[in-house]
Length: 146
Image (tube, rainbow, N blue to C red; front, side, top):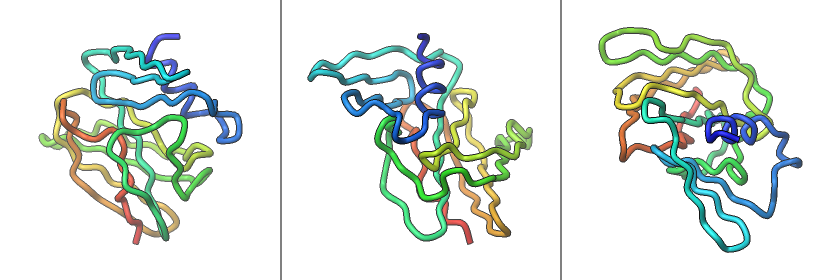
């Protein structure tokens, strides 16, 4: 599979069906796949950045590079309203989405932007600035919904 397909497929799998003998980590420009003690890298498209977000109400965990096989958020299956607006005011994402079984929502965004992310759930909201550069996180777990 192409790297984008790997990300989308693993993110959509129910937690109990995710491989336990492989870890797949998303970096800003590549996937890092570790299996049987060997590490392989696969480049992501040059124009895309994958940001996986897990908003929370009660509990979260620290994360910087999203692991498609081990990261777990609290709101699996939750229906969320997600908006991403770039620095010039252009809306890039304005969707109602259902978090995957692992509690995450994955967004493919343009690489190299600064934007504002807003998430709403069950009357609560969280807003945070995001960036999609070479040194930026691919896992966002600090979105406290209040």
